[in-house]
Amino acid sequence: MKKLLAVAVAAAIIVAGYFGYQQHTETAFLDTLTPHLKNASIRVTNSSELEIKPSQATFKEVFDRLDVDVTEIEKHLIEVQSISSSKTEKLSSPAIAYLRAAQEFSRALSMKYRKRLAASNSLDRYRDALKDRFAASGYGYEHAKDRSDRASEDVDKAVAESRESTKDLQKATASLKAARAAAASHFPDDALVATKQLDEVIASNAEKPKPDVAAKK
Image: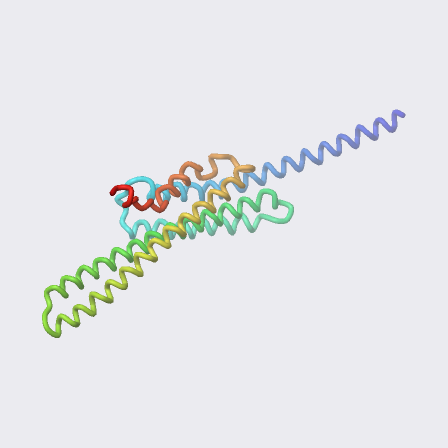
C-alpha cells in the first residue's frame, strides 16, 4: 500500500513538473514574441495619427515613414516565423496574423496618400488646361479643348482611385482590429495598438452620408 502511495505521489510530482515546465516554456515564448508585436503596434499607432489629428507632414515624409514601417514590420514578421513551429502555434499564429495585418494597414495607409496626391496633381493639371482653353482661340482652342477633356478624364479616374484606396484602408483597419482581438487573448494590451485608435481611423474614413435634398424642400 505504501509503495502504491509513493508511486502515485511520484507520478503526481512528475505530471505537475511537466505542466509547470510547459507553462514556463509558453510564458518565455510569449515574452520573446511580445516585443515584435509592440514594435509594429507603435508604428501603426504613430502613423494612424495622420488620420485622426492635424499634421504638417509632407507627402514625402509620410511616404518615407510608411515605407520604413512596412520594411521593419516585415523584419519582425520573419523573425517571429523563424522561431515558430507547430508546437508554438497557439501563440505564434495570432502573432503572425497580427503582424501581417499591421503591415497591410501600413501599405493601405501609404496607398491612400499616394492616391490622394495623384488626385491633387490631376486636378492641378486640369485647372491649368482649363485656363489654356479659355485663353485660346481658333486652332489653338481645339487643341486646348482636347487637352482639358483628357485632363478631366484623368481627374475622374484619379478621384475614383482615391476613393477606392480609402475603402481599402477601411478594410485593412477592420482586419487589423480583428487580428488585434485574437492576439489580445494571449498578449498584453500595451503591446497592441489601441482598439479606440483603430475605431477612430475607421470613423475618419467612413463615407459621409449624402444630404437629403428632398427633406430640405
